[in-house]
Image (tube, rainbow, N blue to C red; front, side, top):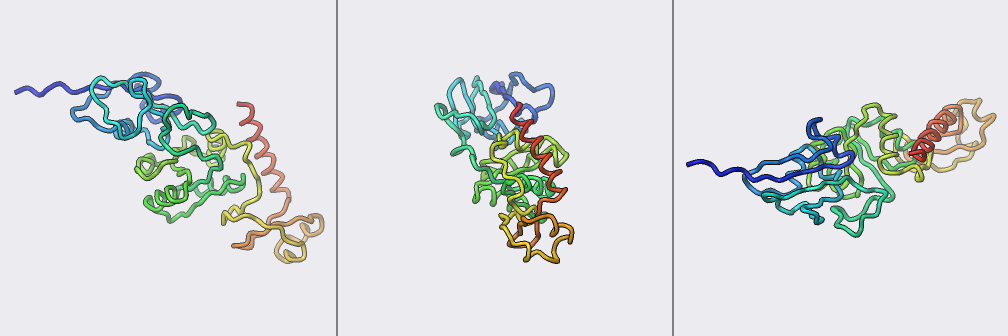
Length: 255
């Protein structure tokens, strides 16, 4: 007895979702063969695209939830997260975009965590965090999970996540600012780069002996982390940081 022919569905991925596809499948309709109907979420992730980067699915022209079963002949259009575009007339796949984004980063992104904190963004990081712990923090605290591992983003509990394309930490910071339209939200040098805690103003007399003697002579404004007690002031290193931050903001606005 011959096996029946497999069912077929046509998938088309848009914009940066194509980064997850092999070159031969990018920016064009791709046919998917299957014998048993599966959810649109499972089929999308079978292409290697994490569901956390998807915000709109159209099946045969109608907006669809992740749980919809794909059947023979269906045509599926998959769109990325619209953080800065209002698509409320159609069905979102997550509650709302994170207008005040907070992040949790996997164990390989320590330097990026420091840069995000320098830019003023709440970024939770531990070099000992397991994947289940990252998923829990992302879900419970509504944080965007940043990673270079697509696998962790496929966990059903993760609703907001992003797979970083860049490998250099500074370029990754620029990528995040551009991807989530964050230039207008930059608050440089307001968080401790080590503890992620808001800095507080501290009197010059309280930091004597904790900063270089020369800094006390010309600087009058100091900030302190309430957790680790590190002291921050506007020295030459801060001026270099500010130049980089201004470049980020300018490049983002020019796009």
